[in-house]
Length: 133
Image (cartoon, rainbow, N blue to C red; front, top):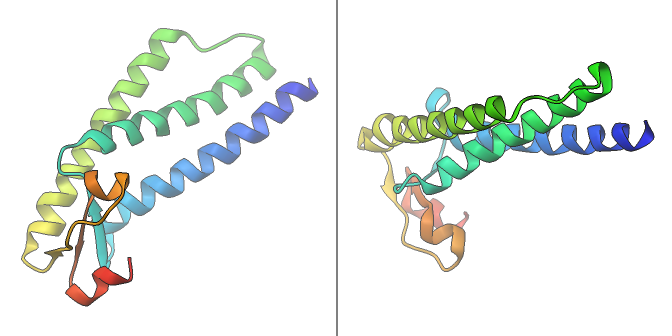
């Protein structure tokens, strides 16, 4: 029982940070005025983040389901949910690109060194903001 509670705490912790990441990268630029936006032009990172988000939430729900009912969530539901969340995050990324970046207000920052910066593109309203991020 203590092992399952410890696992539940870890799952809730990971789910919280995946929710914050999803909000900061995908939802906040759509609904609020932001200075800098990170967009994935190839939709690879958005698909992976969507799948990771779904997996972290489902892991938490699965642990709760096991503690309460002594059963597990079926793998078919898990697979479908992960796929749907990945596609949904790709759609939100495309909406960010179309509605936020293509509004002729944002300028693409020069490429930076690093794995994340080679896949994700930073856009800002002022070119001087690129150095801060």
